[in-house]
Length: 44
Image (cartoon, rainbow, N blue to C red):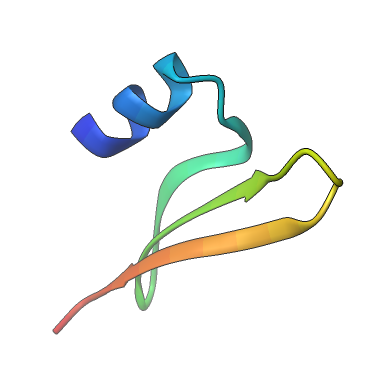
């Protein structure tokens, strides 16, 4: 969550905050052009 807070403070727009899923954690964010990105950390 520290990385999420750091990115958010720098102006990154998250569409989905880091959320625990069955495979790990996932967050969604967008860039200035409206492209969506998924940032995931798996349970390994």
